[in-house]
Image (cartoon, rainbow, N blue to C red):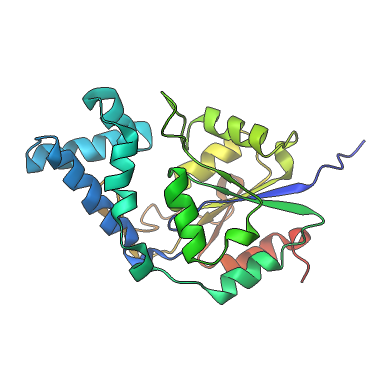
Amino acid sequence: MPSTEKYTVFLDIDNTLYSASTGISAAMGKKIHDYFRSLGLAEAEASALHLQYYSKYGLALRGLILHHAVDPVDFDKKCDGALPLEDLISPNPNLRKLLQDIDRSKANVWALTNAYRPHAERVLRILNLEDQIDGLIFCDYQQPNFACKPDAQYYHEALVKAQVTDPTKCYFVDDNRINVDAARALGWGHVVHFCEAGLVHVEGGKVKEIGSERLVNGQNGVDVIADLEELRQIWPEVFTS
Ligand SMILES: [Mg+2]
């Protein structure tokens, strides 16, 4: 019998609900670098460990917790919490309309982020999207060994929280290809890589050109888009118009 479960749309927040052109990833990278330096690490060592932890653990913070006994809440306050987000992002009426046009009789809409709750809620509030989101999956920095994307455990916990039993009914968009591929590998039905090719962003403290991996649209069951408006065409069953 076909499942009658509603669709669940999962939206990454940072560098997905706002453009990489805002420069937030660079500002974030600088705050994290400063945090490494505040632990007494020299410039080069701070940069090397930042990249190493980000690459190995998905979040620099996890390496800081594991190897430097850092308090994640202190880290969050001094990094994400210290960003001048109000100066960098503002509501985008087109994006708000896009979310309003999701047919809520068919789909729930959740945000799915590697940030801690205060940052996630702050971004959604500044973007005027809070009321468009049915629920929030965040990294719980208060929990020892918290999971984050792209850990399989993070996605499993997301399904439990959003009360999804059929992953083929999941729709997911994220700017990080590794996170998208991880969802796909776990059987999430509709996954999209938001890729603003040609712009630059900062990952693990390193400046990187977006799309430099030369990804092919449709490869591995992943659609690649440069504008969230394209979701209307890719996921027509989710939208009212
Ligand atoms: Mg992101």
